[in-house]
Image (cartoon, rainbow, N blue to C red):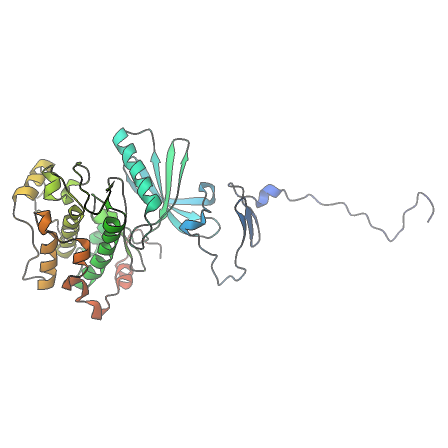
Amino acid sequence: MRKGSLNSNLKLIIPSDEVPVTRFLTQSGTFKDGDLLVNKDGVRILSQNEDVPPTLIKPSDDQLTLADIDVIKVIGRGNGGIVQLVQHKWTAQFFALKVIQMNIQESIRKQIAQELKINQSAQCPYVVVCYQSFYDNGLISIVLEYMDGGSLADFLKKVKTIPEPYLAAISKQVLMGLFYLHHDKHIIHRDLKPSNLLINHTGEVKITDFGVSTIKESTSGQANTFVGTYNYMSPERISGGVYSYKSDIWSLGLVLLECATGKFPYSSPGEEGWDNFYELMEAIVEQPTPCAPADQFTPEFCSFISACLRKDPKHRQSARELMEHPFISMYEDLNADLAAYFTNAGSPLATF
């Protein structure tokens, strides 16, 4: 070949416009190309089989970032913030995102701090899972397990009352959660009510919202602060005395009696409800203890409610003792299917 000439068999290929790497990056800095995910925490390969869903994120994975979730809708409000239904972009996993503005009053700020502490340490199948928490630009964001059936309060609006076999199955799960909180974590929930018991389409019932909970040094610990929803508050708390883990048992008794009868156990004098909460608190302390009507319910259920609703906490049974109560096991042979029951009722928040 002479100098200055080109071999006719050689072809010069000029690259077309290159695809910028930013096309493959998520806002959080994760590089995604096909089934490959790479970020500062390592490499992850998604399944190539369309019939096999991607591996779901676990609380211990530490793989969540706010930039990798899409907001779908607001599903709750309260305590200075909102709760959103969100979905992870790469796994399609649903979460509940609790977002709280931090320039709020000091009491609420303390409740948030307490909730973060408990969420960080509580890992139990009967307590709503906290995945991660973030602080950015004045906002606290808490990524929680999404319970697609909503709350027990939502569910009651649909069904009005819950039959005993399902109440027994619900009670067992709540008691397991309370036993874990009381015995293992030394936590008094202090705000157990239908809206703080969440359900899902697999039949699970879990305790949530630890904003007013308190952590004691031992299982015999007592407290004397006055916080929480007064409707379900035990007499010893309303009276301003010391109280312990059994104050949660009183609240559980009222919740279950409300689920069974379809109305709050302390009926108000008028159709519009109580004029003020002082009248209600006086009724809880002074009026006879509510009970399940013997002509409408089994002796076992009536006995269970009675074991929860003893004005003297010394005579009130603990979560451990109530787990052995005949009511909890009397319907086990029926195999009450909570999953089908929750699903067929069609909670307004459900996505299934």
